[in-house]
Image 1 (cartoon, rainbow, N blue to C red):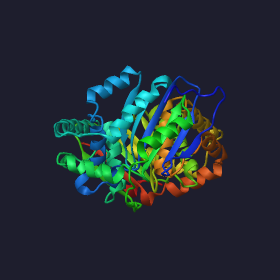
Image 2: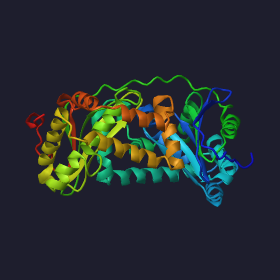
Image 3: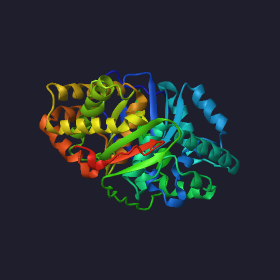
Length: 426
């Protein structure tokens, strides 16, 4: 395949197709690194009840050896080339990627291809890796700072596969068989659910050729329509835990990755709870000292989304922090402060530009775009879209999303804390 060199001039994103119609997107950079990611459009939302965790367990198993390489061979070859090999499973996609020195990328791609096409998933490794995944789930559930995110998704999407945990359910993970993993792979690791993205010091034609040679021979997957979730109305869920500290999430249904108002919501969320100058941090942390951290997350999926506030505090402060959060939301629906929108816009754009200096972040952004929005938007498009958001847009989306009839609250604490939705002043 040779050494892949990029021309000295800056290049733009190339969106290509293999002979079979598989998308290949390449985003070159002036750098000494290079990377590629294989994306598969299957995640925890696509799993049947008896297979919850199959996508994540399968992801783990592909690192355990092929017909030509043991798990140790895989690690030695990648690390010996100066690279990193990894994977992840989310609600809507699974991905495997390598990031390395640009001169060693062809050798690393050979390993990546081998893992995906010739994984053996031997029973002895399945039993060992099953225990690793069960420990991972247990570790996650014992990290309340992270677990509260899982609990909120369960609450918001209850009754729909979007509520499935990405890591899986312990009972089903404990019973998934090797044959079931192979069937899950055969049903999903093929067109039209496959895509390849690459970034760094790479040549688009070489990436296209590798993707075509590697994956065009795979058959086509059967259609699998996804059904958008019907969001629950307002309510409070309590999940008990030991300890005197409370972890709380309160939020609303958000917007999808293709919603025309998504950038307005992103900026509204940032004004409310991103950074130390945000309304929530300023009021609840700096002025009242009720929390160590409080922040918002605006998550967008292919056909739904969520906008959520997260915080932790002592049990006797939960009601006050929730009340203060509602007060800030009510105020945001009424007016913006002078300079507030531009400050949030610059903060988000600065963060976006800095992240794009990383080969891995560029690949993730492109892969997620393909798997959830069906396309890759350039950084320039997103920066321009944020520039176009007006104060009127933010106020309009605040009134739409911050709807008390859709507010869900989840508390992870010793006691339910006596919260009452009817007492909250929206």
